[in-house]
Image (cartoon, rainbow, N blue to C red; front, side):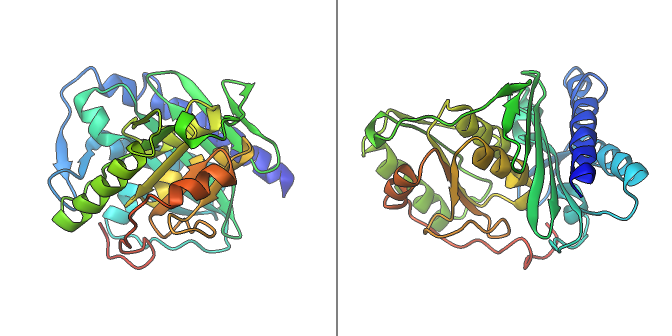
Length: 282
C-alpha cells in the first residue's frame, strides 16, 4: 500500500501542476471568465472550476480506475458526498473561486487522497505563487521541496490568526462570525488575516507564517489536503468546540500547538452548519 500512496502522491502533484499552470487556471485569468452561482449569490463557480475537476478525475481514473471521488463541482451537480474506507480522492479544483473571479492572487488546486477515512496524501498548488505544497502521512510536509515546520510561538498575544467570512449571509451566522473576529482581535493578537482560500490558509499555518486558522462553513474538499499539511508540519487540528476534527462537520481549527488552539477555542462563537455528508447537493 505504501507504494500505491507514493504513486498517488506523484499523480496528485503532477495533475495539480498541470491544472494550475498555464494550461488551465492561469490561462483562464487572461480572458473574461463566465461566472455562475450555486447556493447563493456569493457562492460562485466558473467553467474553469468544472474543467479542472474533470481533468483531475480523468487523470486519476486513467491510473486508478476503481478509486472513488468527492469533488466540489460533482457534489454541486448531485453526486453524493460520502467518505468511505475505499481509496477516495477529495478535490477542490479551484479553492478561492471568488479570488479567481476577481484575479485576486491566491488561487489553489487542492487534492487529498484518503484511505480508511484517513487522508494519506495532500497536495495544494498555489497557482499564481507557483508554490507546490505536498504532504504524505508520516513523511513530512514540504513547499517546493523545502520541509515545512509550524511556528514555535506559544504566546497568543504574539500570534497571527487566519480566518474567513464564508458565503453565508444569514444575519445570525454573520453575527457569530463577527463576534468571533472581535474576540480574537481583542485578546489581543497581532492580527487577523485571510487569503480567501482555506487550503492556502492551512498552508500558511504549516509554513509557520501564521499560528492558527479557524473557519465554520467550509467543506471537506476545502481542507482535506491542508489538514494533512498542518499535522505533518507539526501542527494540530481540532473542532472549534474542542475534540478531534471531523472533516465532514464543516468546522476546523488548525494551530501550531495544542495550547494555542485551546486558547483560541475560548473566543470562537461556534455554530453547526449542515454536515457535508447530510446535505443535499449544493
